[in-house]
Length: 316
Picture 1: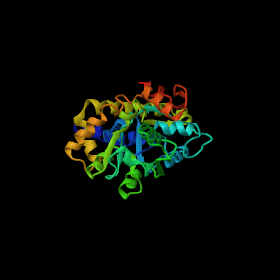
Picture 2: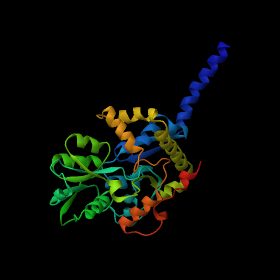
Picture 3: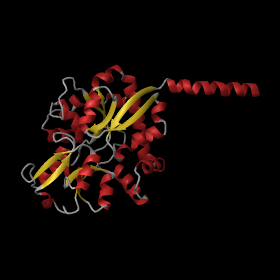
Picture 4: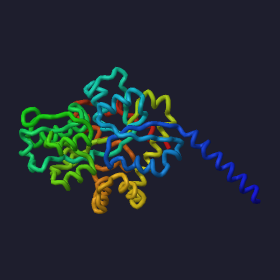
């Protein structure tokens, strides 16, 4: 019996590295922020490995760099603003790519962002004459900020100017350094800024209604050649989203670890925001009404099929 047990243990030890070697390695690029919670959970709890994948996650400094690296093949998956995909597909993005074919394959969230201003900018009227920090001036949440300010009677290039600085971290730095007075900022950075005396003037999703914020994305050409990998990726992501909504106790430790500096009360508030209106997609689905709103803001017609393919997420 001892000999049999020893042999079984030896076989298991040999099998574990072999199984690890059989994992398909893929790289993923994302923006920072707590909306990465499903991916963080999937990475920490082996959900990707269960689907035969080894996923490496990097954070991008901005959408221009992200698109460049995706098109160069450095990354196979991304989370990015759906508006970024629409803008670059239509040749309106930070750069033009003749073979641009990035598509949305699932939904991350429905616009979980805040309009944040410096301490001295307490009202919408105080924005006049100030500088707004954006990622790319023609895509991403810049268009959302323009829309919100226009609704308040504040017109771009007349009442305020813009400074293209990059992703969330760069926009936070622009606010804290005084380079800019207003920006759209994701959580938990918006909450951290508020504690420092900065103002949250509005919830972006509440201001503009249904909105498809970040999406899971890959290149259409790569997806066609690697269908099983894309399906496996979305299956792991979908399962992670489900856990976020159904097992708070399981995901709070991950949120705590990845969102340093937040109190327990802040973590509770962050979780409520992530799982509330405008927050994470419950099953990583794309918000159809939100897609329509993005296309409206972008001035593009159609049903969104040009910019997404959700069939991979629908396979079980």
